[in-house]
Length: 251
Ligand code: PEP
Image 1 (cartoon, rainbow, N blue to C red):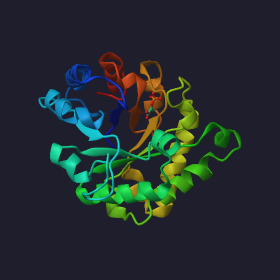
Image 2: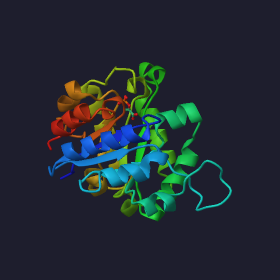
Image 3: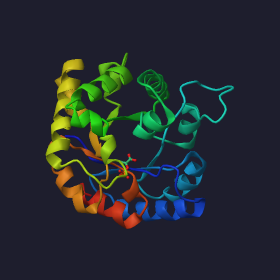
Image 4: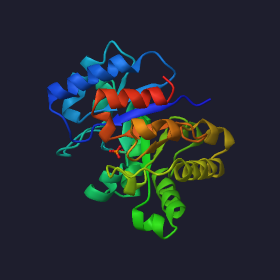
């Protein structure tokens, strides 16, 4: 039985006081239900957000991490730094990092190995561009991202990985994949994991949907059998809308 995970990706938003207020609001909303709740603020707010959620069950994670342990890597953050603060999760391969910053699967794979070695749970994002969907290449693209990002990852390690299917055309656009479109890709991803590893791994890995999830569409998406939660951007920036999504996942 996979436990739902609702993760908020705050991206490059909020001032420190706003982040702390939001974190307190999420902490109050998270309750003690059957849903794991995670917030991923920008690095500079991690410490303040940790303090704000310390008396709640909300986990805190990074939006990215670098693969080298330490040294002359200006602007980067190490897995050890995230662990030292208490981070449990780290988002890797988000479409904005792939398509805006230019990250490739090889780099994401290096980061994923570093995260696993440090005991962080990677949330590996995959998803197709609009033109790729329209030309019928969704699964080809997603499969190649999975293959490249998961190279060398063992079945045991895969148990620590969360996958997030995020069609790029649905991120921050207000356009959501229909429950049928999302479920189809999630089921294909699970089949891919069964082929790559085994059925036990495929049945255990949580696959989140991301792309304009909001209170109005969360329940129907979460009701799909292969959707195990959500990675939420815009609607995670308000405590009440994020709380409604947590509730839709069964808190
Ligand atoms: C995201 O940032 O991963 C995301 C899905 O954003 P939004 O919910 O705003 O589409």
